[in-house]
Length: 182
View 1: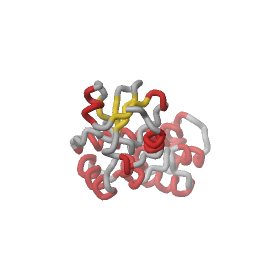
View 2: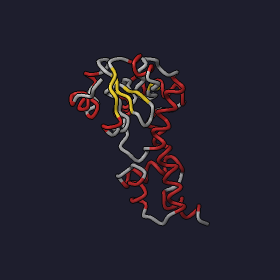
View 3: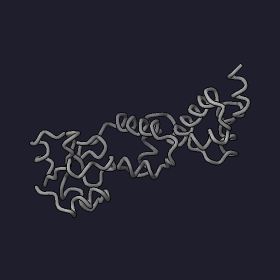
View 4: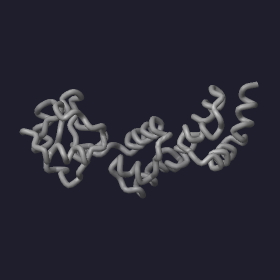
């Protein structure tokens, strides 16, 4: 099927209105997706468009693990690990429950409840722990000011960063740096 501009625009815009109307595959990765997939935008010349999933599979493309164009849901544990891995990679970004839910095709409520059941903590608590661990490494390995480290790990408000750090570690960031470098 020839890729028309409207298909390309749907892919660029992650347009959910086109989900089920066509699928696109990326030649360089061997993966096919829904138009609404939040994966990185491929080069247009590497994209093929299919009317249905079966055409993409017949051409030896694999379904994307992010948008699940094959309609098969991941087991909760595997799905939550994908979310946790995403959080580990992008902890410094402004990740909210709404952003994660949209990115991983779920309601806020379902993501929150499932994450807590699988991981034992809420996504926010998990994200805060990732940020504090990164801050601990930076406090030991660099001499950057505390407020810069806070912003670097995704907590731009210096007072909030210091309060959260102390709550999680029992030390202020400055105390932690001093006791860890002795």
